[in-house]
Length: 566
Image 1 (cartoon, rainbow, N blue to C red):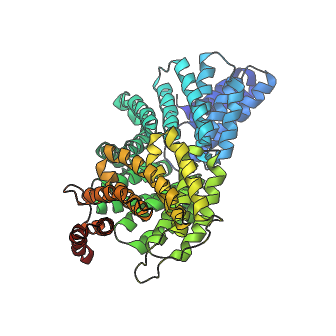
Image 2: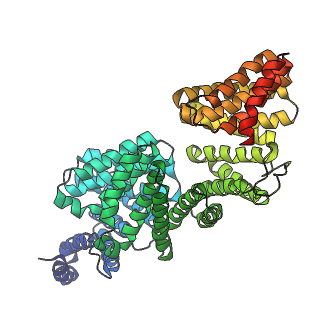
Image 3: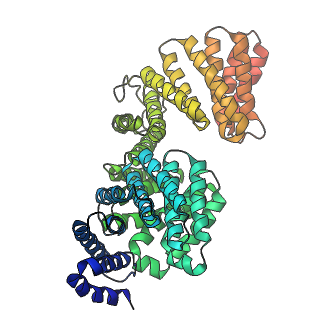
């Protein structure tokens, strides 16, 4: 008997004897609310079925208190999971109500509902930016699933969705290895299904693939991420999924195409990367135009990705326009995405010498990051350090003229801060981050380098030299781990340290700093352009001359002339 016929038969029976047939009708309605047909009106029918089930269970619970709480909770979860355009807040409210009904239950069926309700609320919390609370609840959902010992495919896919939520939270908190482990476990559960059952749970597999591909990208496993993304991209681009399951298909395609863009660029395929990023923007824009809840932050991310690729491909105006659109789109949708977009746009404006347009961006960026830094430090404290470093750049660095535009005027204050104040806050924050997670050592190195410049401008050369000593020591560690990535930064810090020591009259200490800086840049395997050695060579020549070694100074100075002319 088809479900539609069963519901039709049960309705008059439930009206005649609600206590006997009402629960059967309600369960049939819940089952119907989960059926995805892809035909016109399917979502509306699913919504109507879930709403009817909730209303019916409420009447049953009123007539028989305490006997239908698990069924009511199951109906509320079903109502919250229908993709009918309801708000994240309403889904979260329904999930929390469901949790309240079954959180003290001990029977297996109630625990299954509790696990799914906790997963649902965790996903909603993640969407609102409350990532820490979302992770706590997702881990609680995972423990509940383990307690149930999932057997059926539906139960294992419920556990997989929970693992996806855990991975998404770990990724948002800057924990790529933990995110990768959770996403891989979710994909493993999907792959373990038979081919027939995989087709039934295809949407869960697609979400798992998107999360896993993003996690693989985050740890630099470009080939693996690209292979996975392309596999599921092909599946999503079939007529059935793109035409009949357009909301889910476009949402997943947007995520997968962003991953494809990152991977293609990393693998030296910029044209393919641009095409993928542009297509991701098209899908995410369609979702925003069609009112999918939560899609604006995804569009902002896609625009920022596309704009960054355009900027790096030699199209600065088009790239900056896309990033500026990302800023507008992210406002009111996602503070984290807004902060990333503001940073990207500020860098683009600085690169183009559009100095007057940088200050308003930093005036917005710093307060956004400061407001959220205590609530979500893993996300917003690193972003705040980057924002403060840009304040230091605008107040302490001699930024050059670009394309005929004048050099940047040194500002006294940006975002209400002078360079030294901003630099000290950046270093203090970055030091805390690096002590908690070594991955932030590079950020600390940049903060120290910026603060040194600001301090030196005040005339305190001695403190500037000490800051550079710490910066050099830190960058030596990083260089030992990845020479190609950190060679230029180490050479620059050594050169500046040599200059400060020279200014202090400590020429014997300045000389080896300059010599090492030059050697790093001119090494056969450095991969750095010869012109980068010009300033270090001239600094070395100046110190040699001050040490009374004029012939060596002239020889070194002559070596600087050819790359300087180039």
